[in-house]
Amino acid sequence: MLENANALKEQFLEKVNSAVSSAELEQLRIEFLGKKGPITSLMSELRNIPNEQKKEAGQIINEVKQFIEKTLTEKNDEIKKKEEDALINSAEDYDVSFPLNEDKGSYHPITLVQREVEDIFAGMGFSIEDYDEIVDDYHCFEALNIPKHHPARDMQDTYYLSSNQLLKTHTSAAQNAILIKYKKELEANRPIRVIFPGRCFRNEKIDACHENTFFQMEGIMVDKDISISNLIYFMKTMLSEVFNRDVTVRLRPGFFPFVEPGFELDIQCLICGGDGCPSCKGSGWLELCPCGMIHPNVLSMGGIDPEEYTGFAFGLGLTRLAMMRYGIKDIRVFNSCNLKSLSQFTNRTFIDDEKEGK
Image (cartoon, rainbow, N blue to C red; front, side, top):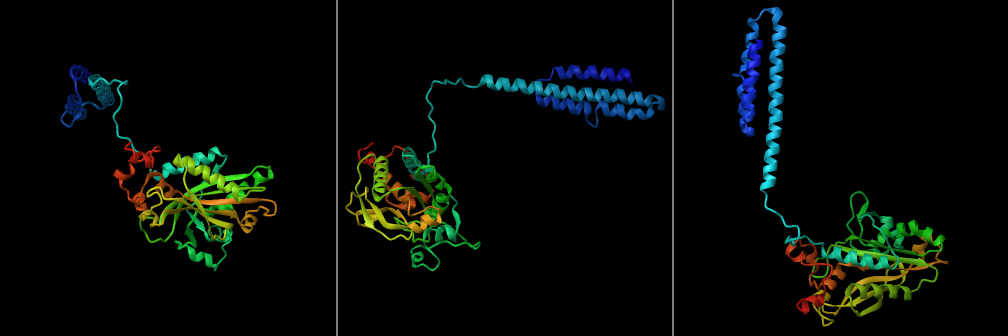
């Protein structure tokens, strides 16, 4: 039995050393370890061996079997390593100094505008916050001086959920939480300066300038002696930075329960230059930013004394700002999933670039 086992090992080693592929190793495995292989035959011969020799013979056969299995594994790893090295060495040389020609993705135009506006306000000392898209009735309405059954609620068609929550209709829904979070700034004799962008939802009739899903950016500043002049300064600074030129704006009186006095900030349509087009519904103006001085009741519900502090708030329409920024005539383009349309925008694209053939 011992002689047969040693002869089998030598026979196996001779064949395995000449193998050069994984396929050959698989053939050797079947040849030596398969049902018709010599290991199986040796195991069958154990019944013909005297009982006192069976244990030793079984150990010898088992050692040979384990030797073959281990050698096959090691040889297979060796062959794979050689194949991988050969593949690497046969690869085409790559010149790292050669410029790449790859198609790259791009950010959504609203994302580009949002990040640019965030950078502008951050440069003016504003913090940037985020807020939930699903909110409760209190934060979306009551904390903004819009109590239950107030007629102002008729101004917004809200998506109510079965959980007694709702999809926020405006970024102002975060205002109460922001005031409470940052009121410690006032205690440290520092102003509250925060912007909080987000996605909003309203049951709008969809057309060229209205969508049921859109993006806004709320901004607030609270301190002693804050006035409308501060509001106008920050808005004009932001718009001039975004459009890289002077823009024409106008303030109209507007009613919003959470500000007093309230205004509508309109921007002259940059698509038609004020002549009238479908985007501005022929008026030459686009409603961009409802704004005003924060109502004393809203400050009080945020834990801030309105007798000592005042502040302004604005709700910037990022979606409409992106329309002006990139000369997009139809708001539905933003949610169209049309990559051919959306991928053309970069953070340095201006309306004038197209007009000048750039």
